[in-house]
Amino acid sequence: MIVKKISLAVTALFSLSMFAQETAEVSRELKPEVKLSYLDSIKSTFKKDDLAAKVDSLWMNELVSLDIYDDLTKDIQTINKDVTVDEELPTELLKQRLAAMNAKSPFEIEYNQGLENIIKSFLKNRKKSFSRLMALSEYYFPIFEETFAKEKVPLEIKYLAVVESALNPKAVSKMGATGLWQFMYGTGKQYSLKIDSYIDERSDPLKATAACSDYLSRMFNIFNDWELVLASYNSGPGNVTKAIRRSGGKTGYWDIRNYLPKETQGYVPAFYATMYLFEYHKEHGINPERAVVKNFETDTVAIKNQMSFKQIADLLDMPQSQLQLLNPSYKLNVVPAYHGEQNFLRLPKDKIAAFVSNEDKIYAYVKHESEFKTIPSRLAMKIAPKGRPVRNTQSLEVSKDKEIQFYKVQKGDNLGAIADKYNVNISDLKKWNNLKSNAIALGRSLKIKSDVDTSAKVVKEPKAIPAIEKNTEEAVASADDNDKVSIQTVEYVVLAGDNLGSIAKKFGTTIADLKELNDLSSNNIGLGKTLVVSKIVTEIREPVSTAIASNSVDSFKKKAPSAKNAGEDYYVKKGDSLYSISKKYPGVTISDIKKWNGIKDEDIKPGMKLKING
Image (cartoon, one colour):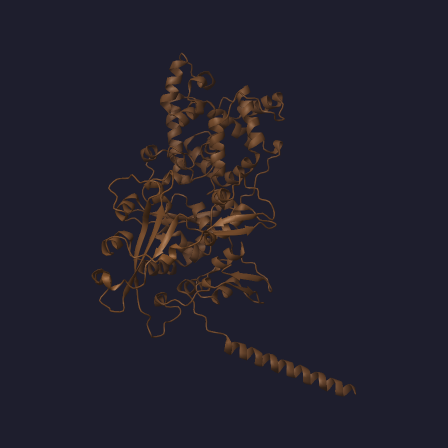
């Protein structure tokens, strides 16, 4: 009986193993051949570095979020130093701390009631802002201190960047002052900062800090007093000189303060209040937020050919927001290549290793993309039909519901993570949902608009130009009868407060292009006017009957259907990686899967459900 049972068990196990083998063979036979995009075929040959950059998306968004800058700037301009603020901080204790700060500083820091009021106002209203600012300071302060030490500028001047820009290199004032140190255009040029269509070095932390150090040193040689230097930085040396004359020749800041412009009267006290909060943050329960990336963990590489942030992000599997964080001086998210000049790209050190190890392949991909770019808008205007193109009215009939999505806030969510997931800005999220702060309630539905501004409508033309436009088609198309053209325009409706400069900046074009596209003879535009902001003519080739190699450059001429057009779920299997999963869906990259699923690193587990085109 026992022998019979054993023989039955052995037979069953043998049958199961045979069945599993047959099933595996069938699945191998049924599994379709996956064609790789040129991007993925390039990346599959990259030499990998074991280090992984762990960059917190919320912290990255801090550098492109202007809410602290707006709040702090408004405070400094409107704060009333004569209004007593109810905040627990004994006056005698404050005097002792200010005296301790004064003992180790070249500034004349002394107690007065106005300074106490401003310090208490910051403590009452801006604790959270300073917690975030201290995280940013971990990245920027070492840059400032190194430069100031070389020029013998007091290291405490680093707090001036907090007052000026809230440590945001993209900050732009109403008067046009730009960058961490808020240089006006003329001052930037005076100190040899490059400002052109691609680059604004007023936003470059290293170069702008060097220019600031030079300016401050020159002002100190004039006034021989660092408080007066600060006042002159805010209002200009001329206003300080006039205040000295009006005071009867007094040269102390507190003696001439009432003769200075109103904003400057609160400017130096705001500087001291900032210094105090950074020095005594622990005593007031201000806990600095975590700064994952430090400046010494990054490095630069010289760029040989022009490339966009999108190309770099796709190749190196990193978010574009991180590139914007590390390279704020590039205005159009493009690293240009000038003849005879060198431009640099700053990356985390592990990404530098990947870039340098695979430089030839990276430039080959960039070159390939440039060869298949669409015709520039200026050239398109010269060869395209005169007058308005025929519109596809279906594309205009897009309901607002399709332009708006709703997201329900889940446990652990924050505005930075949600903004990163949908590729939008924190400031836009707050505007769309009437949020006054970054706090969001669990379970709340947030309104999220599409990437393209709802006032901008894309109008697509028919693939083949009608027979009545025959002459124009002959001018555009090549000699090959199979070649046709497709025209695509993007339009924008002028809103209140718009001008050609702001619209050009929004759509990454120039004022000259806008005027040429819309036959404008001046810079004046009327409210409600519809402007063409981009017009592109692209060449359409008939499909080639011969097979195309999956990893060939020519595969870009005929793309396989992308998973981005049809959403589905994928359940992670044992042995899967984000790279192997992305290969199953032509046109999908690792960055796409991370964005759709809110994944910050590449840690996935068997059984985990991933959204493809989530």
